[in-house]
Image (cartoon, rainbow, N blue to C red; front, top):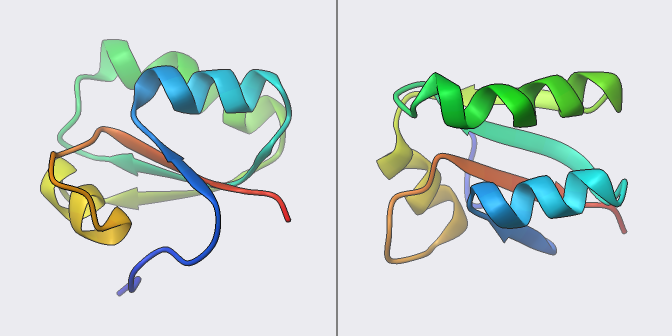
Length: 80
């Protein structure tokens, strides 16, 4: 299982989408229980950019990975 995400990251759909559009992503984390209508555009953009995509079981798990206080549908580990 994946431990805590180390390095610069963005969390949440809006911030993830913004970073992906600016080609700043390295690894995308998507919660399996997130609304597909929300995550699908992010997933497609990540595939276009040939990013590594890791699916995590729940939004709560994404929260734990990022060490934040709220559940999140997505997290993006940034380049560099």
